[in-house]
Image 1 (cartoon, rainbow, N blue to C red):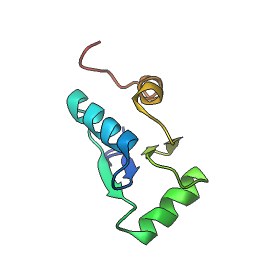
Image 2 (tube, rainbow, N blue to C red; image 1 turned 90 degrees about the vertical axis):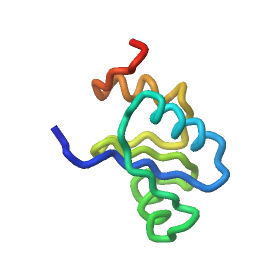
Image 3 (tube, rainbow, N blue to C red; image 1 turned 90 degrees about the horizontal axis):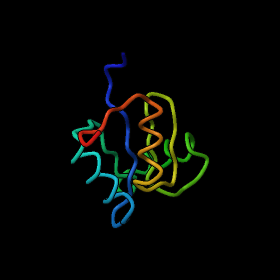
Image 4 (tube, rainbow, N blue to C red; image 1 turned 60 degrees about the horizontal axis):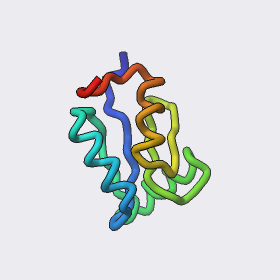
Length: 87
């Protein structure tokens, strides 16, 4: 099992990013937040792995989910065998 936390790339003022952060926190799902609005190198990294500039982007141990909201996040995480607190 991977020991490093998944990476969540976000932008300042992004409502989808805020929604996703809230959901992950509520579910107790660990991640490392990287704000690409404050770090041009991180923005380049996000663009390289997602092939686009929209946030959020989640790098779940090499599996990439880009430009998403909670509705897309739930099935993606379930496919990675993540259990939710309400399930």
